[in-house]
Every structure is written in structure tokens, then in C-alpha cells.
Length: 235
Image (cartoon, rainbow, N blue to C red; front, side, top):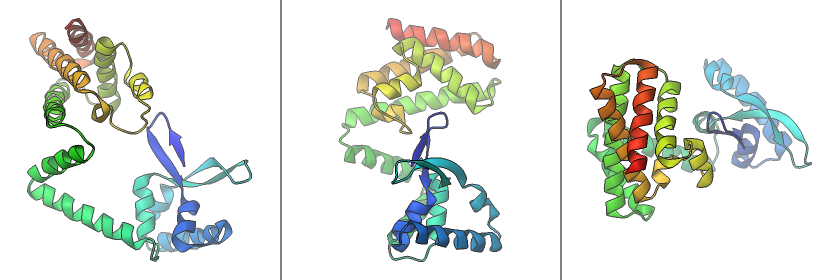
């Protein structure tokens, strides 16, 4: 696999995964993937093949060669196209997750319960979990304000979030993740209770400053973000 630092996405070698599923060597898996790609295109699913990229990965001989890679979503879809005993448990798990998602659409509280149980399984205390949920609501209120006042692009949300974070912590979001040894994981899920409190305070302060000044657009919200983060730092 290879990790894209900018997009924060893992890409996995398609042939390596197929080799495991069909229990053949690299050359056998490579031929299988070539045939499978042709079959997928004939079925009209060109997008699946298009979503596979050519990147250089290190081989067993220590050299790097271009090979087909895909993100986890595309990998799961490819696995569904492979008739294999080893693929069956993953297919069953995907069906279970799909069923749970449909249930959550009918009853959103189930998603909250599952998240709480996941945090408990990770050893988080009830107090930490409550702070995590409370902080998420504060975050949602802030992003709702941004969305209603001229902030549209995901990159803009990321810039404003980074300003707030750096003001109170002295670190950018990426620097904080690097400090904790994180890659694609959510930073907030790996924060201490104190870090969650400061993050929530900074974002609450940012929204209040923005509302008081009727901040609209990127530049005005940047100013509010700096002030909100600074308030948390001083606290």
C-alpha cells in the first residue's frame, strides 16, 4: 500500500489483494485481474476500472514498479466481483454494514449508540465520550454558520479549522496528527479530554465572534477564527 499525505488516503495494490483472495502467485493474480477488468467493463461498470490508478510500489526485489492501486471503497467493490471463499466473509460484513446504515437512516439514534459503543470498546471513559459528542455539536454549529455565510469549498473549511487549531495549540492540524503518529484517522478521536475541551472552546468562541461581527466570506471568518483560537489559548 501507499499513503497519499495530501489527500490522507491509503491506496492498496489491487493485484496483491487478488492474489490473497484467489490463492495464486503474483503472475496468476495479474492475469486474473486483467480478465476481471475486461469483464467489469463489459458489465458497464467503467467507473470501477477508471478509479484504479497506476502508482509505483516496491516489489519483492526492492525495486519500484507501476501497478494498479485503488482506495478502500474501490477495493471493496473489486472484492465483491471476485468469487472466492476468502472474499465471502468480507462480502457478508459489507452486507451487515449496509443493513446497519439503512437502519440508521430510519432511526439516526442507532448511529449515536454505535459510536458510543465503539468508543467504549476503545477504552474511552463516559466523561470523554460525552465531551467528544458535545464538541461535535459545537463543531456542527460552527460549520453551519460558515455554510450560511459564504464558505463553500471543503478547502475553505480546512483552512479556517487550521487557523483555529494553530491559534490555541501552537500546532497545525497536520503537525498535531504527526505528533500523535496519526495518518488518515480523525484527530479528535485521539485527543485527550483537555484537548477536546480547548478545541470546543475555540470553535464556540469563533462562532460567537463571527455572529457578533456578522462575518461573511473567507477573510472575515479568518479574522474570527484567529480571535476564537486566541481566546481558547488564553483560557
